[in-house]
Figure: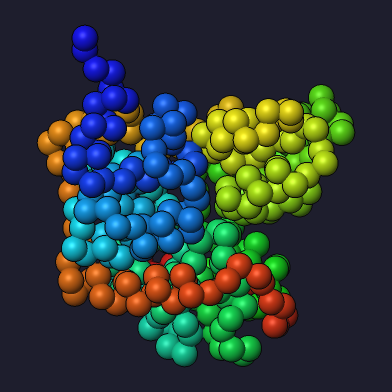
Length: 320
């Protein structure tokens, strides 16, 4: 009898001492076969402490790069080599160097949605889950460059009351969530709670009851007394929300919030990655070492923000 794709994956994974990590935005079928599903911070922590010899990363390239940075001795595979993050490609090393030259006294806080080369030029990384805590941990008065997501940066400035120098980056998927989408769904479900991701527009965030990472959304959904929750993030998160909270209703702010690159990976591609051991993601040592220092600083910081300044935002001028 022919083995199913799931059975073949389990068999190969066991024999190869492999672990499958998947982001919350992956296809439902990919989330279901993963050993661990989480947000960027949770996946970074899991990758840092895994005892597996092989990591299959079901996400986008910067996530697999992060796993390689933290585990240089392990084989890290990205099942689809075209799975990349548009935001990460909006900031290249040359642009960041020019921005640092304009602000030589500033520390660089880099969102993990960035290339390994950009991380290597940064002082500390962050995720949407701990960005406020990372910024809040920096001594008051120190200039801070926050890259690449200007919308997350704006949210962090408001949370921490810190002055931030922002770049031009953004998440195309989260910008598909518009204020009118929230208003329309809220009109149909007036008693619903609204939670959105901090990569959303400021006007969308202001309409929300909760602004948090995908991991934060999962925790909030479990604790909330609301029976209906409107979800303003990539629609892949709905799978876990519904599975973990069967007594609650979760409604997407818009079904247009789909990241096509996150959806490139399928169970078939996970199987092929294990069978053929591709596509390997390996970060050169001269990039890996400084990038690792920035990631390790991030992993050592908690998730509670601190208000330590005025909260002004400076938009970075064009460096190109």
